[in-house]
Image (tube, rainbow, N blue to C red; front, side, top):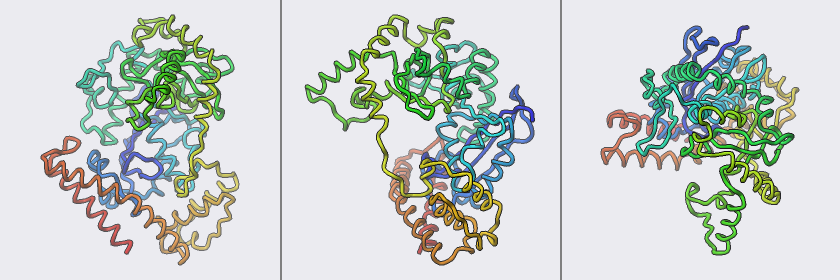
Length: 483
């Protein structure tokens, strides 16, 4: 099959990919010149009756739980559609902040529905890409030909709806998934047209081997790196240096904007004076109070990072654009090499263990399922309720045994036996009880704002009242169904 791009966007019930759910999916397939192929996809996904959405998210998207139940497909049906109709061979699947956000939601949905969470983005010539860091590096290094937005305070911002506004690109309904996809395609074409060389280079960085040629510990060299973790003052771009290989395609890199001798001396003085305060808001802390983040950060080869050799700074006044010079880089590089004890300290911090998650639906990263288990997963997906009622799965991975109960409950509840029903109802009740305090707190905050004449996301007070009413009805229905 010919190579295509698939641009997509999600609207979700909240920001947490392991506990929140997809409510809208939209996407457009294009050819290599970014001309649309076929019809756009724009669909809703049913919110299950074990989920309370974030009221703030609903205020932004305008998508209510009841709307998804009336017009949406089930998550099971969505996963089948995604793997059979969207993830075609030789497709580059891409979005705007999709690797850190949208991809994670899809990965977790596939996990809950007995699909391999990863192969949709790599098998049969498929790949993934993310335009957000491409935009960041283009703005920092090759901004000509594009108008770039700033906030009211004069700080650079790369919000998609503001980029489209500055460049007179149609974007009628920001935070509607299909409108965002159409806008992203237009921005992609704009960057490709105005800065084709940088665009093509960053497209090659979606391959792990290409990233490793720029940033690696076998031959460590300073390199240019754009990331949201770096400050807006220099367009989220700096010169970084690899300091440790963490394995599994991950490196620790140091921001050469900073001199480690000076930072360690400041830390020493602060400790002696008792001035380190871990209770301050994260962004107000000094580097040592934040574990030296983001001065030291992790880079993952499979996250399509926007990295480039230092040579890109030699053209078009690149050094000045990011507020650095070669002398500073050389001085700070010598400094960090003198402190192997600091590197060891940071590596140890990066290896801290997290408590084991009890919820099986959140244990996607506990390990890979075996080939034998994936074969059984395929049988689960292929069977309907009647067949699953008598199907005795013998999974090696205990997570999948518990996950199967959840799968039956959401898709074929009538086939569950008494023990399975009890397990599910307890899980559902506990999940709703954990979510309820935050849900009700958000409702109260929005209600108070409305009483003060304030609205959300540019909506009218009538729109906000309607959405609040729908959320309260949803909450009430879930409470009644659990009695």
